[in-house]
Image 1: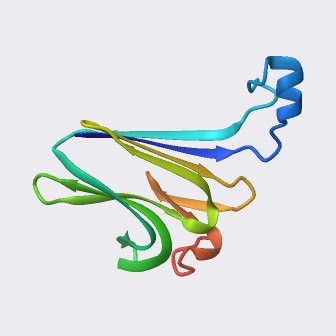
Image 2: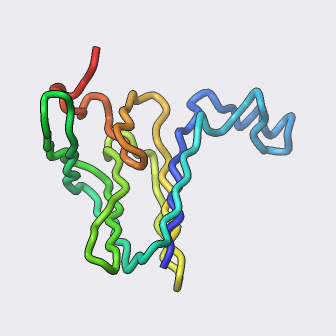
Length: 142
């Protein structure tokens, strides 16, 4: 099985009226629909994918001060279970999710998340997006 995950930061200034009047309803260089897009694909020994709303994501790592571990509540989490037992995840704060789609086909999972433009966020590791107001203050840098 394979997962294709896409994360889109919506452009709050996108004008559908301008797009319709000038570009057949499509976005253009001066009127983009998205500020940015991240795309990830995982296919190595993927056994299953489960999406959990209002879940807890465990943010773990190490700084110069030593290891850390924080539970981040109210997250939209796509948990990836590998055949070897390893579990990975894509995660995003529910407060910054505009909408998402999750489609499971026979051999491919499509996961798309549309992120609100007006909410600041942190991207501490690829595929993890945490609203700045929910980011652990101990890890925040000036």
